[in-house]
Image (cartoon, rainbow, N blue to C red):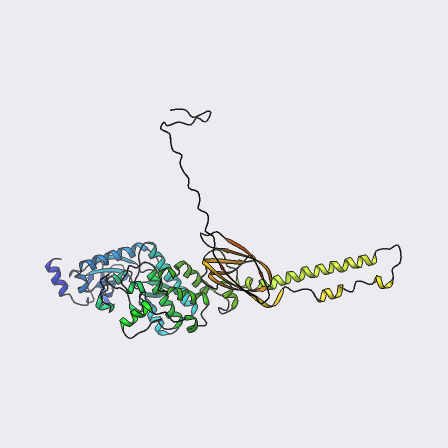
Length: 483
């Protein structure tokens, strides 16, 4: 770096005064600042377009590697091109050598500011979280990990129709964090990056991280949204990092009993210390979609019956009306068939009674059989006084169907069955062969099964026949001949 640029950066003022030219834009005012950069409101003097200009601090601008990574991340974020990620469309340097980038100007508030106002309704929380999942999914698809996901980096923009548009901010900027700003020391393995309250265990130990570290941070945010406070809280950064590394998060089922079981179970899995145990973004989007679109009481047993754990996007789910009406319709069909059979029996008896006979029969033998009337009163009912319970432990996330109707999905399922007797159980999962099994349930019985789906048979690989030393041409009208 030239000595003149170095001196300019050392003497650079902290703030840009109004009227300063930054590329094609003119600074109007300061919007906010942090340890790494300051954000200004600027406007294009010709067309009046307003933008946000983020200018790196003089200290970071002296670090050539930090600037290179800043440029790389700005370019990567711009390549994502997702509506839920803030758009960065210009990059440059000021006359004093400080780097900056220009991004879209957003009007609204951060998720942190919204949380400070009070609890967020379930429907609104699910709408926000689904958009965060979509933004992360788009970033992960091109190999970008946020690594500093927190409510301060989630911006809520009100749009027409009363909807909320989510914009994810500061992709990759955590890579520029310093030890002093994050309050965590550099380790021999590298720089620990992230905000301690939302940092993943692997990130806290300065290990290599992937997209699953964002899922952990998202789990912390979901815990905070639905419970009202963070899963881990401490007075010092070191204590907080220790808790992220070793402590088990509190049971969200007990802290938020009104939260539907699939949501609570997903959050607990997201906060797992083991990366492989965390659910995918696709699964999270479906679970949150059920919460956002639910039209029934979320605490009703029918909801837990169909989605006892983490659902999979494997086909349509029966509507709430169909689930509620299914037992009644099945019972009604049975009673209709039973009534028709009894009518046929009675008509047959009357026909035999009225048929002409060669000799008169005794009066005691002419009366209809007395057993017909009791049969009507004692017709068997398919409903049992005490329902049976089916508990399934599966080796992978599956979709469970009972008698042709989807009743549960996930690795664990607990299904209440109103009708005793034989049933057909069909379990399917992605990339696994389906499993069909007949079961027999008694009234009040709890049947617990641990099942493993068979892996599909590998397809035979196509092999090429080795050619002989002499090449041949195939004659369609005769035997092979030499060329």
